[in-house]
Image (cartoon, rainbow, N blue to C red; front, side):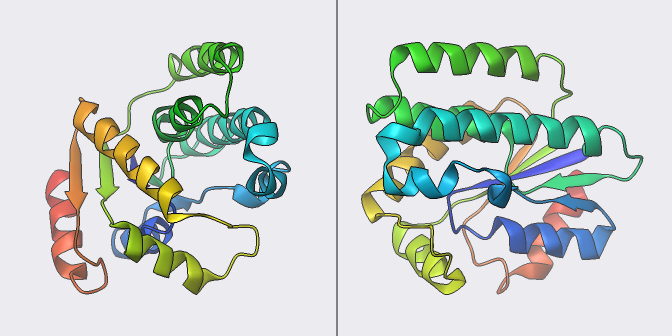
Length: 193
């Protein structure tokens, strides 16, 4: 069994994953953004580094699922999914002209080959947040590489809405602050796992 937590940059995925792990004893696998060698350059020049950054994230996420989630008998939580990688970030880069059609075709071919071999998550938990909340959360964590605009986050929010609407497997959405409504969040998750 594994759950994925989906949400924009700064939505609170890591905090929710930790909360679920403590409550239910799940293993947590965090987004390995520090292992992506292209990410700092990407935030400086998105057009130049978009494709390399997305391919690296795709490989990291696939490796994480194969080597950890599927090899363990302990239920797991991923705080960013391989599905978001394509449906949110790669598609947004194509939409914004930062990834060429040829780059997209190469990326998508690899993605399709990978996900064909993966079981679907048992549950998608989507954290829906408005842009001011996302920006405030990003500022709080103070990662020097995250030079992110409100317009970029708004574009990603639109992608998330399409992604969530098209997800055909078990899913829940939370719009409230997870810390203010922790008991409700955990109860809802318990009811669907």
